[in-house]
Image 1 (cartoon, rainbow, N blue to C red):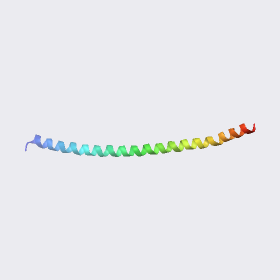
Image 2: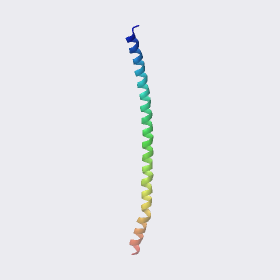
Image 3: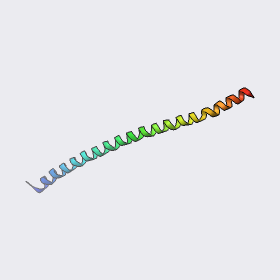
Length: 69
């Protein structure tokens, strides 16, 4: 077998192995980013909920003051 043929086979195997490794790394990164995005959405939801709860007493006080004065 000629050296160029061996080199072609070896390079094909190396490229295939790198492609599989890169695919696995990218899939893992995508799944991690999806989880991070869900966590950020959940934190934003909690933050919005807390802001709306924070506004309830001030709205209630303003409503009560309008009734009595």
